[in-house]
Structures are given as C-alpha cells and as structure tokens.
Length: 197
Image (cartoon, rainbow, N blue to C red; front, side, top):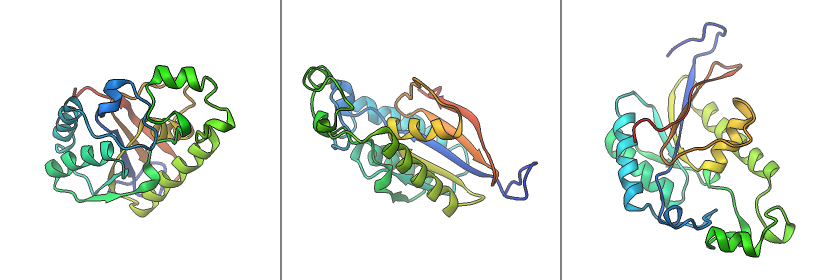
C-alpha cells in the first residue's frame, strides 16, 4: 500500500481500459447498449492489452456486462489470473433509436441526436452514472489497484470530471488510462495510451 505525499490516505489506482473493436465498430454501426461481440481484430487487441497489463500487479477486475467489454475482460482475466466482477452501470451510453443503425443511416434519420424523441441518454445522466460507478468501485477498493473494462463515451464523461474537460478525446480500442486517487485528488499518469497496439 503506497501513501500519498500530500495525504494520510493510501493511493488507489484505477486503470480504465476501453474494450476491443466490436463487429459493429468495424461496420461503423451505432452500438449504444446493444450487444455485438468482439471482431477478430478486437480479440487481437484484447490479447495485446492483456499482455501489457499482466506485467503489473492488480487487485481486482471489473467489466461492463456488454459482450465487447466482457470478452475483453475475459482475455485479461486469463492473463492476470483475476476473476471478473460484472457491473451493469459500466454500460455504454444509450443511443436510443439510433442503436443498430449504420452511422450514416442514423445521422440521416436522426440528425439531432439531442432531440427527445431519439431517446439518447443525455450528457448529464451519462456523467452522473459514470461518476457514480467509478467512485463506487474506487471506494470499495481503497489502497488497491483496479482494472475496469468499459466503453468510450462512459470513460470520456468520467475523465471530463477528474482530469480536464475535453471537447474531443480519442479513446482507441483497448487504450488504457491510469488514474491515482490519494483520498483527496485525482492524478492522471497517462491518458488513452494504446502503445501496446
């Protein structure tokens, strides 16, 4: 257990991992909370990130319940020896009526993604859910090192609250973001790093 220089509290580390490429990522199809599996490339990306992560000690592994995250976590679990704790609140942002459509189709049928009739999870709701789940996991594992496999929009929303606001932050499939919590403040060691690919 490492103590912070500025705090009496032990350092808690969260490594946020985006899932590997799904079949719908490859097709440029809107996923949201629908459940396509990993593509062959996504499985290879999961193997590469697992090889990276097995080089460090980890206490626990969490995953969204959606297949693309869960399958990524299963590859990581096989390399690290960790069991997976499934957390439905780690799901991707709901995209409402756009889900399942090719992106071009979705943009043509529903050009205003914020229109109430689209049924998309709004920014405030997404951020509240992201903060709730990441902070709950952090508080359950104070002083530990935690892996969390989830989704780009959810991760970006949380990072906007703890690092800095990003208009656009590219989070590549299986990229890793390392955060440290000292009981008072977050620090980011690295952001959306995909150097293992």
